[in-house]
Amino acid sequence: MLGVEIAPEEPLEEVAAFGAAAEATGFDAALVSCHYNNRDPMLAAQRLAAATESIGVGPAAANPYETHPVRLAGAVATLAESAPDRTLCGLAPGDRSTLRNLGIEQERPLRRVLETMRVARRLWDGERVDHDGTFRASGAGLNFDAERVPVYVGAQGPDMLRMAAKHADGALVNASHPADVSWAADRIAEGEAERPAERGEFESVAYAVTSVAEDGAAARAEARFPVAFVAAGAAEQVLDRHGIDREAAAAVGEAVEGGEFRTAAERVTPAMLAAFAVAGTPDEVAEGLTALKDHVDGLVAGWPLGPDPAAAIRLLGAALDPANPGR
Image (cartoon, rainbow, N blue to C red):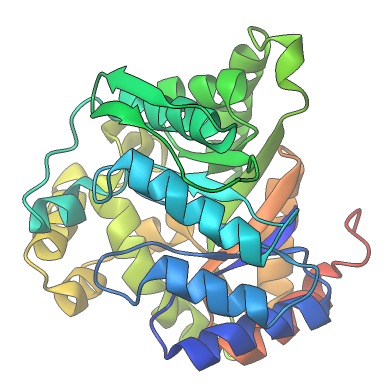
């Protein structure tokens, strides 16, 4: 997979146009990010599917806390009717800080994601499901024929990475630095060693915060906002790996939880920016993203893409050459 992330921050007409541009540029996937304070990701993905013909589409990553997993499975199956054989489902437990905005505690995230994936597959296969775990379902089923959709688990921690490699169709590795992606690849290899043969092939994908522009400083400034969310949720060992001050990261997290996103971005340090984004000129971004591809099977350039997303898609296409993935 060589794809781009599109956040439905803009009107859905623009989201669809970004997806069409990604397809025309040669990318093979356009994934819609899922945050409660943006436009509805499933509606956005539907519009994106209607504006494209062959590119892979889907949520990245849907959150099984905000939406009941059975309802989520139905929404993904509905999307697959609009984009058969090219829909995928990114699935992840979400950011603790934004879930708290909704009064939701992120309890047992690995089990929640695993159970959601298992129940969704059964529903897509036409089964009626009883489930009593991190969520409940009694005699639940879909009243229409559904396509079984590949599930890619959004993962960063060791247990989630291993679980994804053992049970999912792929992993969206939430990392933007070669040291983190290399470490994640080792955890994925551990999970693949226990993967049953009948589960088929597995695809590891680096999902990197990306911002590109001819003006490198402008690209880096745009990346500060998503980096704030990454830094706020980063594990202490990740912060230590990059020499990031824990108190500085905590200060970013406090601003994120308080909804003070501009303040959070202002608190992002150069070390956070270097660790949690690939940002700069086309040459700088091409070098950074290519370094990630050495450790995984695929790559998704994550939002914001750049100060001008439409221009960024063109620049990324020229820099990465989707028609020549070996570049």
